[in-house]
Length: 383
Image (cartoon, rainbow, N blue to C red; front, side, top):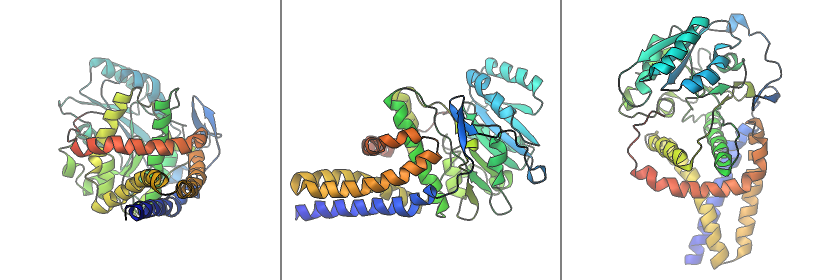
């Protein structure tokens, strides 16, 4: 009886995994990803970044950034945003409960860049949700493009390409926000996990089931934000300005994705396991508030992943090692084939060789974070 249970569990989990990879994730692998890219400044950019935008189809855009004592990031990264090749845009930086150092740097930059606007927001509140809502309220334009102060767009075509997907029906564009490469296994795992997360939300959006976006690279209209009442339904949480809002307002007809490498927005990964743990615990906590069918979908994906490995291990111990080997091999061939294409599109080709090891490491990732996610109710942190 026990043998039957574990072998059927293993087979069912493997079948569910194959379904997700072949039905959902394969969509992203065959999706047209735009132009070829080359590497510059440690990130990948388009070979032709001087092509003029189509002026007659470019709506004015408000780029909104919230910062909290990020003077170093402002010095290093804001110039790439201010120098976008676009007809008409403003950059609103909401300085939220920041020191005078950040504000002085912003004031200097404003002196030399008239499209930069500074909004001081000293409300003492934790989390950037109220600061972001303040910036959106003061934005002059109907098209909003969101990113963070520690983010570096891959090219000066980022703004143009991100808003190209918007039209009368499509009010949301989901972008990609990878991590910069650095030495060490922690960085390797964070880059893979970020790509896997992008694979999920982009593939589900292609299947008509959008459930989240990342605030480091996200476009939507001010009209949509106002019609939905902004962040009112989850304003008691510091987190969720990106994923909870998109989960609330997105549906299969009002979302598009953008995976052209020139639109990628890069940021540094966490430098310590503790910082990474705190970040992921907070992010997973907001996931508990997703719509029910999204939670079921994501739970099924994660649980089948865990049961595939754990069930296979039990099958190898209790029944026959060759059954486990066959199940693992079939799934891994599919995972490797599909993820290799996707990782190449996401400009992380070097991770392809690590897929078997990192795929297994995701099981430990789920097992570690699951109990903390269920117990954690403290999402009151800025970022």
